[in-house]
Image (cartoon, rainbow, N blue to C red; front, top):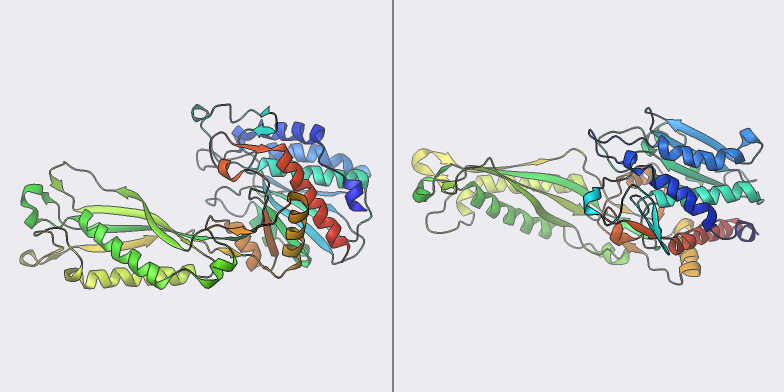
Length: 434
């Protein structure tokens, strides 16, 4: 059986590979334009492990290094099965990382270290730990050469952590048709955490609400239109209407979302001025996290309607105190609010709970981890929504630590990664029985 041949995750092989990857992580940080990752620095370690087992060296693995930008490659690795149209894929193990400031960490984020079961450094959880994990799976397939009916494919990608540059990661691979065959079977996106199936993610809309009033001396408040008060009251109305029009959806309970859709402010800005000046302009910015059962386009349309209604009925908007006002009739002057949205809004994902991929993932998780508790969050994974829209059966899981995701002092546990390896082996074994 495949499970007997593939065995367990080999710490003596996995840890040195992960160490090599983490030690490249300073140059894998993705925050353009200052930090442009060079994913080929990570890819070279994946290729060093797998090319000796490739068809070019007499082995079974088909290895393809695909680059759309200098130094920023993707790696597709295939272990061929014997039956056409049968495939399982592990995708999403990205070779870029978020930024880290060494001054904030208790250890060097860009130098691999270990403390017993803890494997430490930027990328151990997100997502270089998974790069190493799936590399080890493909290496073991190449070494043991099990007779499988199902083709196993791994796709290591560039450019997951930032969307300001497009077309050079999984989006480019999909556009060029290089992943089309993966539509014939379940696709497991390996970039979440805590060893459980993540079955739903949120959409995201970033917004900026600007209020314009009239700047004036604070001792003559009756001659001013306080942009801060106008914006706060306008936002209150907008939030109230948002939660009325986009309440908790019945499917959120089925998918076990931790929260419903939310709209909240996260930033405040204004041009500046003295403490004795009533501001004539300010902007509140924030985001909407939207469960996948609502459309971002519908939300944007509604928010624009809310703002139009507020501007048409300023005299009905709550004020703050006896001289607070948003209209100065004697000056023929009205305050106003405007809302803008950033272009890169995204929809959420609801995985197919009736697919074979979901079934085998849950069974494998139950067998290996001892419990299967699928969950959903309104964090966003835009790339998997794009895959879903293209017709892929996307399921997601991951074996890092959620509490260290994008955080300082990032780490993963070898024991968790070892269980992830066993989950992958179980998935392959179950699909072989079909």
